[in-house]
Length: 291
Image (cartoon, rainbow, N blue to C red):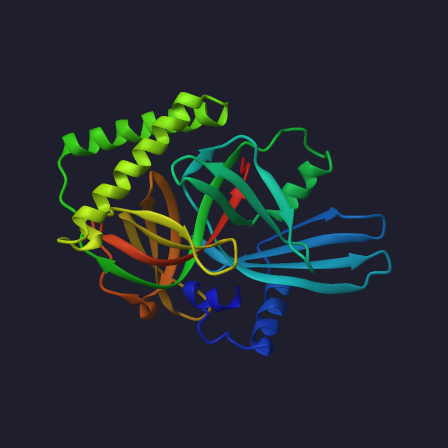
C-alpha cells in the first residue's frame, strides 16, 4: 500500500527509512488518537494526522502491559462523502497485522465488494461489544496509482431515466434470485446472454468504450484493488500541507456507486473535468458505520 502514498502528496516517501520517519512524525504530531484492548496483554493504538482537507496518514501500533510499543502498519487514507446503507457486512482480518477488510454483496456491481477498513479501532470496539449498534453503513473512498481521462458518451435525460429504472428492476430481480426465485434467475440469465450478444455484435464496428459506459472489476490478486471506469461528478485540487505536492480529489460515479479518490497529477493522463470519464486503478478503502 506504500505505493499509494504518492496519491496524497508523499511521492518522495518510497523507502522503508522514509516511511518510518513519516510514521514517527505522525505518532508525535497526531490530530487524533484512539485505542482498543485486543487481548488481555495488548492494546491497539491508532494515530491519525491530516495533511489536507480529505487525506492523511494512519499509523497503528501495539502496546503491551509493560509499555513496549511496536509499529504495526502505516497507510494513507482518503475521506469519502457518500454514505451507503448496506446490511450483512462481513469482516476479515489481514494475516500478520491488525488490519481488516470488509466484504459485502453489491447488486450494482454483480460481484462481492471488498475494501480496506480505515476506522479499525471503531470497528473493533463494536466487535467486542463496547457499542451495541450493528454494522449497516459504509463510506467508500480510494487511492489511484494510475489513470487516464476519456470522453463521455452523449446521453439525454430520457436515456438516463431508462437506465436508472433498468438498474432498479435488475437489483430487485437479483434480490429475488438470492431468495430462491427460479423465474428471476432465468430472467437474469437471459438478460446476460442478450447483453453479451449485443456487445459482441457492436464491438465489431464500434470502440468498446462507446458501448461500455462504466465498469468495476477486480485488478491483480489483491482483493481490494480494482480497475474502474466511471463518470466524474466532481473534481478539485488539494495540496499536501507537509510536502507542498498537489493532487486531484475526484468524485466518481461507477455502476451507480459514488467513490471519492485521489491521484497524483503526474499519474493522470488528461485533464479531469466534470462530465468526462476516468479509467484507471483504485485501491478501495472505506469507513464502516461512521457516525
